[in-house]
Amino acid sequence: MKALLDTCVIYPTVMREMLLGAARMGAFSPLWSERIIAEWVRAAQKLGPAGAAQAEGEAALLQAAWPEAVVSYPPSLEARLWLPDPADTHVLAAAIAGSADVIVTLNAKDFPRNILAEEGVSRVDPDAFLHGIWSAQPEAIAEVGARVLAEAQRLSCDDWQMRALLKKARLPRMAKALG
Image: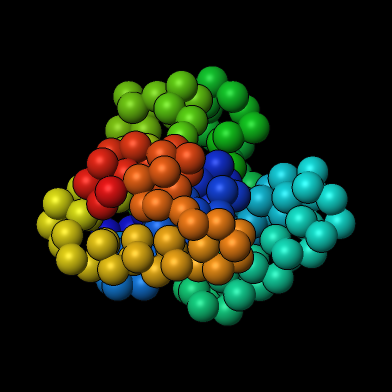
């Protein structure tokens, strides 16, 4: 399965690491566009110069790890599309160009299911997406969660617990499943 990751699920670190951990184990093939990555870096600039530098470094690592994930498309594809928020048409264009099965996003209202269906794409929020993978491969996702938790504890020097970390990351079903 191919899943296009929207900026809003790449920018939060824990959410991104859970999704990419699932991709690393072969649960799906991630897709994104250069514009989606650029939006992530711009959003990280709000954290200051260090946040922007960190996002640029992480984006470079992401692109090196998955060079086949970067989708490009002709401007004419984006121009023919309509979504409630015109600023999101590039996400749908990338999904179509990459032959994505699904767009993983937190932004349900701007990606109406009927419009996506016309293009052969669906949408899912990251919590439901990960929960579905966990249902099929619980041990593998538990391992991904354990790695993400260990890294969060190392980086923050806090004694995070799985349930609290995933709830804070807007992954409540995963928090219940793994917590």
